[in-house]
Length: 227
Image 1 (cartoon, rainbow, N blue to C red):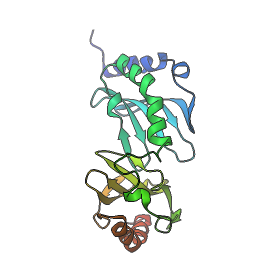
Image 2 (image 1 turned 180 degrees about the vertical axis):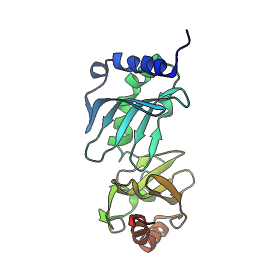
Image 3 (image 1 turned 30 degrees about the vertical axis):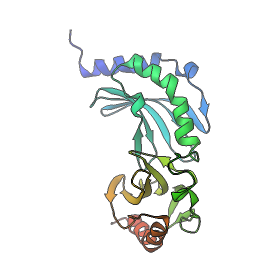
Image 4 (image 1 turned 90 degrees about the vertical axis):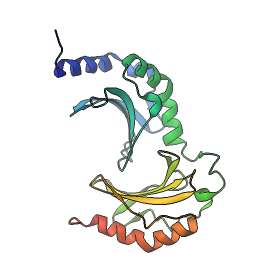
């Protein structure tokens, strides 16, 4: 008898429900607390997550029906990262990798964010006196990432600063690519990426000038409901 999609979903769900995560995984890692999600969101089954209530960030264990893979995604509101070391089509392999790797992943990537790569330590944005450039809030947007605690993203790019309006998932991100020694920015409007070039720079001095010139107007534009 061939299983239909609903039966396949329920079988995968039971695999997760039978996984004793409360015993096998830490209840809390830093301020990230473990909890079951157990939600089918269209083609994504969200099984459980570590969530930081203050900032709303979460690290989620999911199954993606499009790729037929189990994986861990880190949802930082304005952007999402996928850990390539915990992607597999086999549940038992996923369970093993999560048990072994997930706590260390959260500690390294989200809690010990001040411990940057040796390629940037002691130079680039790590030596930048950014406080006057990136205020804690501006134009209704809150700074959620700053250069003292960046987030390592894809292909050697650090997110060194970010401003967010959590209500409508809009904001601006500032990046530094440690392989190309380049700074650049991206905007989000209602979760949709907007490619921009006004923050392209080769030094913190160039980036600082661009931020002072453009950021306030860009955030005001993002904050307009009709934009």
